Image 1 (cartoon, rainbow, N blue to C red):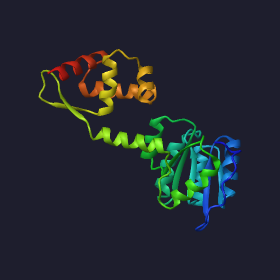
Image 2 (cartoon, rainbow, N blue to C red):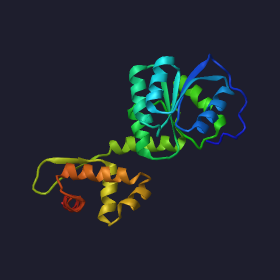
Image 3 (spheres, one colour):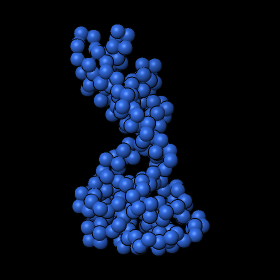
Image 4 (cartoon, rainbow, N blue to C red):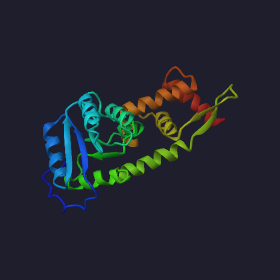
Length: 230
């Protein structure tokens, strides 16, 4: 996050907002604290690990917990535990990468916001206040990715495998992966083209293999080719 950016003019206040800040980098915490407190948002506690963040949240009951995704012990796991213990608390995740699996894991954990550390520090207070007001703090490109994922889940395809009457539902994303496999694309290339990590690509491949009952990706590709040719 660019903490040397000029802080924007003070925002209108509708009551005090309290924050627990969790990040293992002291410099990052200091920059976030300065940005928030310059706009009247009070940081009531700082934490360097997931367990410290959970304990601080339970102790102080803040309006918002701002947690680094890769907080030692897992910021995402901490988000889930905090939401379970304090359902009314808002959780905003901070991340230095755009890995989509982190985004979806954070949403499943109950996160109310997901912000990149590269955003201007001056915009962070407004994002925090927006979350308190019930808005979702998500970068525009991530909103587009969420919509795409939603649409993909709604466009699963039922394939009938040779020798079987039982349809197999394959998601649009899995079809994108398997199509690239059919053209000989390696895992790293598929990850780049789909803007996902290699771990996510392998997870999709594993899911496809499991659904098809295939022992490996080559067998899965062969089954898909037979099913789509039928």
